[in-house]
Image (tube, rainbow, N blue to C red; front, side, top):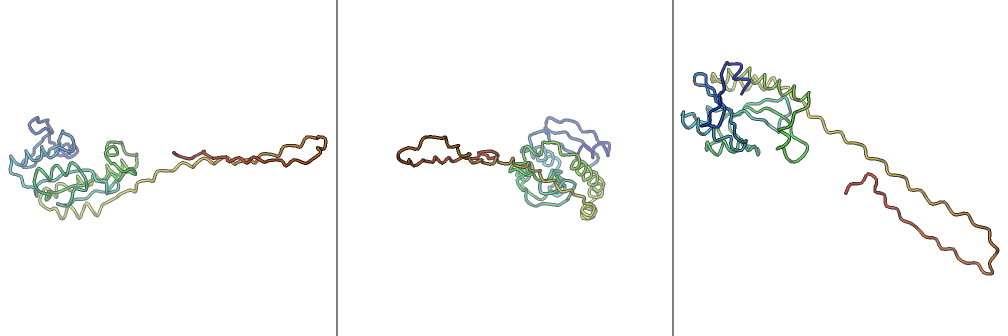
Length: 213
């Protein structure tokens, strides 16, 4: 949103009423919510409701965990895939039929993406994401003019995703080899009148090296 505002010479100003950074150029409104992600629909609902903007004329830009870094896709409607920002927007608008510009960031190896989306991406992924944003900015004017299908075709044909590198696993330390106790040397003794049986004590060693509790 900031890149688009800069490219079109639109000034984004904080509006406490909408709790967002807001800018305008003709009939085009740019809204950058300043609330928590799960409350970002508030600004969209208030502005769209006041100016009578239907969902089909709204474009939401968001990160997409299901796409590799460098991918950028446009679509209208669909599910929210667990995205709390989209969930709030859909609930407040009462519709899923707004447009989405999805910028791929890749899925984390863990179960939660909450911390992942706040981290800085590696250099290669960052470059790919910046490239996706640049290509999206090129087709947005076409989309704003009403040629959504043409914008989609152009953007999707230029897709340049990069696969996330799998985390390298550190080699597990080798377990220490168990050494058998050397037999004790027999001491020279006078022959006893009777032979006694020698008892052997067997020991059990439990290797813990490299194991995880």
